[in-house]
Amino acid sequence: MPNYSLAIFDFDGTLADSFPWFIASLDQTADHFHLNRVDPAEIEALRELSSREALNHLGVPMLKLPAITLYMHRLFAEGMHDIRLFAGASDMLFALHDAGVKLALVSSNAEANVRHVLGDAAGLIDRYACGSSLWGKAQKFGAVLRALRQSPANAIAIGDEIRDIDAARQAGVAVGVTTFGYNSRKALERHAPDYLFGDYTAMTQAVAG
Image (tube, rainbow, N blue to C red; front, top):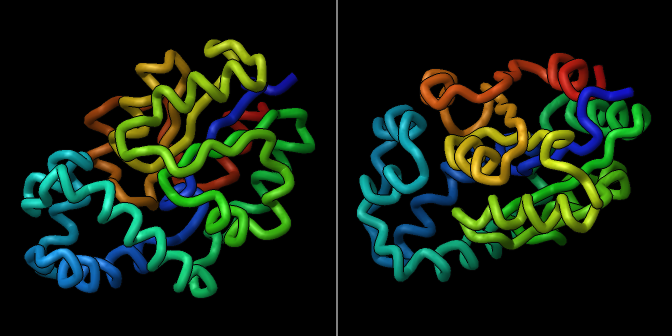
């Protein structure tokens, strides 16, 4: 029996190596919404901050956030042919599926974008909950648990940001985070996730046993 019967994945920075795309798109997004461009020297410092802290630091108006999110989704759709899964991500999903673990994916990205980048692994996902707001993940986790008839005690959420840890805690599920995504390892460690994953082999072992 696997250690967890359900694994709920984030997408960007967890399965997909989209951080370079995100950085490249910042200037275009800033120009479109008449915001200040991000100084390249700020990038590493921003990886230490939560999403709210980063937005506040950059002076992004909360009222503009829905429009900014939609705009970046369109940019992603235009550039997703250049975005790939991290090496080993697809093999990990297949291994968990073969071990009998149900798989779900919760992301603020659009489902069509996610499915395209997942490729052959897209069909392994038992439940998609995409297009969620930056801070709506806890509710999405709850909806996934209900839809797949899973107990929080038997589920793990896996992401790459501080907000993923917070959402998992709110939903009452275990939480693991990758150390190669958006937030830095140090920033993630300060929020004490149950697991810090440096590679997909460790992730597979923690979830499937």
